[in-house]
Amino acid sequence: MNDLPPDLFSWLSDRLPGKPAITGARRFGTGQSNPTWCLTTGQGALVLRAKPAGDLLPKAHDVAREFRVMQALEQTAVPVPRMYLLARGANPLGRDFYVMEHLDGRIFWDPALPEAPDPAPFYAAMAEVLASLHEVDPAAVGLGDYGRSEGFYARQVALWSRQYASAVSTPDPRMEDLGQWLAEQQIPDAPATVSHGDFRLDNMIFHPEEPRVIGLLDWELSTLGHPMADLAYQVMQWHLPWDGPLRGLGGVDRAALNLPSDADYVARYLAHRNMSQATDLRVWLVLAAYRFAAILAGVGARAAAGNASNPVQGRAYGALVPRVIELAFAIRG
Image 1 (cartoon, rainbow, N blue to C red):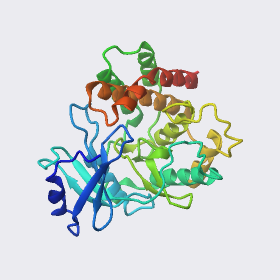
Image 2 (spheres, rainbow, N blue to C red):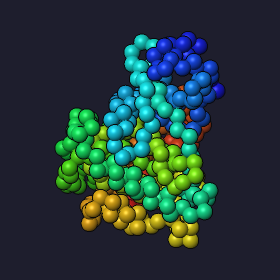
Image 3 (spheres, one colour):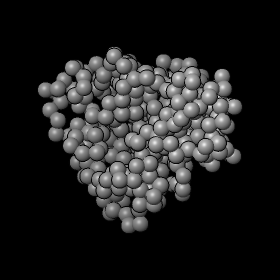
Image 4 (cartoon, one colour):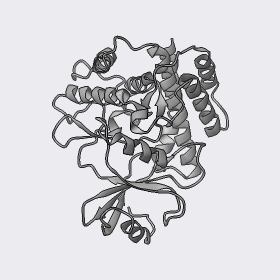
């Protein structure tokens, strides 16, 4: 589907490197964050990613931050697409967007990886990418001011409490309980790392034939933070139901499919970083579930307001908030 304004193509051609002639656009139908299109040009495909239209939650969908962090990471071991153009202010689309390299590879939506004869190497590659990201010195790549390095845990609890409150008209008392419990935990700071914020299988593009990540995408929630936040967020999601839109591994016999256990995956990540243990992981896991519930509530709210990239899927996600809350309580014990 091409729902871009007709004059955008010539506007882009004049500003992109090499001035490629853009002949068409196709909107990707998946995803619930920033709407994204594949642009057809005589020099190969490009990708345009934009801020959604309509009223948005505070600080949400900042595509300029996505552009900045991926551009900065191009010089590191973290696999990211090349950034070509950031458009802010007046433009034919009427909102902020950026254009980046189109990567030819595979995106896997099912974390059980039924397409792979052996899924273990893919998860090993994921652990290595996450470790590589957390080994980047933010200041060395121009991201020293990408976020506040102190008080990350407390600020995350406060942020997602506010985001959840902004998304719902009647808060779930269990979310308020979780928010209070999380606020009571004392988590010390760690040296700041670049935090992806939504590190999961379907936000990566793998090589067409190898179990190797060639692109880590969707940096909308990235900041400077505590490395355990990314690690816990990925591990938490594996406990979501497999037989539903949340794409977890709940109910899957991981050992039978040669999928890593939580402990095995964490150990591989730690080994890549020469670390001995993951501190306060249970608290970070609860925060990950709390945060995810707030995100899903926001997706549901956007769908109800008519601003979701995929309204039907958005409403389905919003309806799953109670299940994520239950997972948070199960982890907390």
